[in-house]
Length: 86
Picture 1 (cartoon, rainbow, N blue to C red):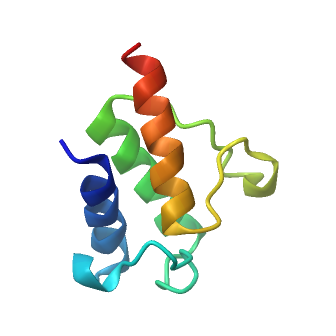
Picture 2: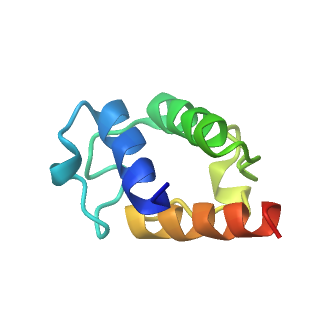
């Protein structure tokens, strides 16, 4: 499974956009995803990859998980998946 495409698919689904509209340089804010959408995206990503994302929805700024852009999220998920399967 291609992690990047799956993450983009999940984010696009939350933003009600076509995956082609979700580019790596976009922020979740650019895509119109609010805090609830972010939490739902994180849950969907955790379920899709069977991982735990170190993200605190109550204090997103305090989380160890970078959500600053689609690229940062993809990189973080790739790292978590690699750690889990090593």
